[in-house]
Image (cartoon, rainbow, N blue to C red; front, side, top):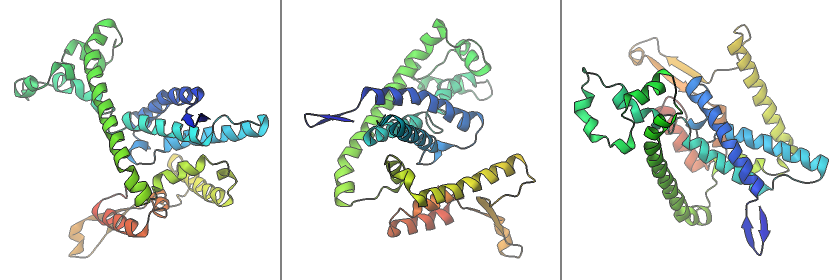
Length: 293
């Protein structure tokens, strides 16, 4: 960010780099969440794919500073890139665009005489919100030409309509944030634990923190060993994130298994949450859900 006449603006190279990283992150998300169904970064609030991008850019920034005596990004610019990639990942993630596009043609492609979808609800689905041409959907569901003029003409109106809707939803969310910002930030002084890690990573002193490196090495060794255990089962696993508690004797054996999950990153974030908030959240999550997130 640069300042001129008391005004703050974002540099062009920051916008270009953030824009260039968006399709890379979306492709990465699709591969993890849809193709391989592993990782699922956008199912939790702290998107690790965006944190990884921030890590690489921060290290690049430090390297350029050391050898060229200048910085590629200021702290605020790194924060902007993080925000842009987080919003883009949320839109293109597991519960948004990976679900919406397949739904555009699902009622028409999978309609049969047995389910009678044609008579049940086809008339209730606007043509400008869906793709109802089976000849176009064939290439989408079975593989084939997708990016020709005839197919794009059918897809362009639903895509444009939903894009406007998504933009309006994001604008409303931004407006809500502006309304509640003063109360939450200045009056209640909420700590926002999820943003603490990305915020600290934009600081030049973050990578000189010895405690950070100790924690990083411990977690990295555990993850690497567990990853090797997945590939080579003869390597012992350090610990499992999920456990099943069973009771052999009646009457508790009627419960079957009692799933219990323990995720280290959630525990770490819990240290940044005020105690009067973290206790009820952890208590209700532990006994009300199978997972802590």
